[in-house]
Image (cartoon, rainbow, N blue to C red; front, side):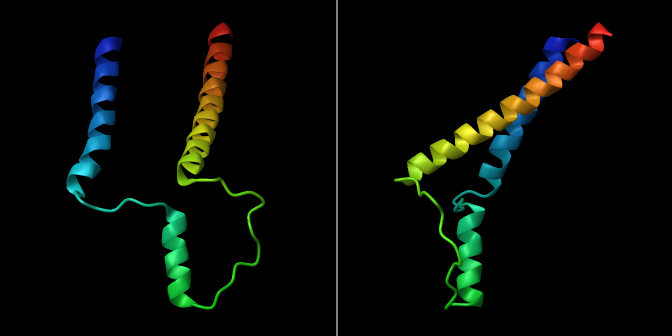
Length: 93
C-alpha cells in the first residue's frame, strides 16, 4: 500500500470518526464535563459552596473556548514535535 493510499485511508477514518457520533446522536446536547460535574454535585449536595475560586475568569464563553483550543494546539504541537525529533534522531543513528 502506497503512502498516499495510507494517508487517504487515515483521513477517511478521521472523517468517519468525526461524523459518526454526530449522526448517531442527532439532536443531542453536547457539553463539557465541568457542567455535568457541577450538575451532579448540586444534585448530591445542594448547599455546596466551592472552597476556592479561579484566579481569572475569561470574559466570555468564546474566549474560554479559544483559550482551550490554543492550549490543545500547543500541547499537541509539543508532543508531535518531540515524536518527530525522536524519529529523526533514530534515523540518524
